[in-house]
Image 1 (cartoon, rainbow, N blue to C red):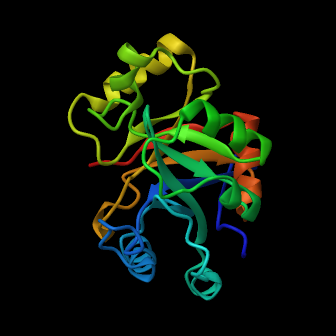
Image 2 (image 1 turned 30 degrees about the vertical axis):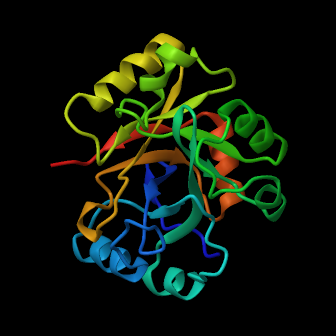
Length: 223
């Protein structure tokens, strides 16, 4: 995988990645990956790359290395799985992790997911927690605060009014760190929200390490 394009500010390398996107590989996605790249470049969207987090699966078969070279963008893969607490992004998926869990299952136990993901050097991040039914906050009242959560998606490009505010209040009260992602399903929505990291990120392992370092910030670029 080619290294992400990055900017240098005051002699410090900064990488901005959209950590939550969907392509036509997702059942409700309508965007081709090459069209994401064209849109980012033609509209000069200030992100260095994105992570494809397809619903209830990990896309093993797609090879984006040629597109990475031609676009100069970093294209990584993750997944979005479903737990009893709501939807969760997974970064750092490995073959061993795919054997340990059925990504297509609905209602995976979050505690078990967090424990297993940790054992396989991956990171699980509840996404759009302020969303009704499929967000973590909506399920805390009946299920309690889940143990083991460290990071949540505090900025989501597909959130309705008030949803991110609910998430941010929850994060402040429970001491969670926050990431940002567009949750794009169509080309024009990519880059609405993203996450800024110090240093280079060129593969999924480096993304996990950057998240573990806890030196990142969720940013919004919504007009």
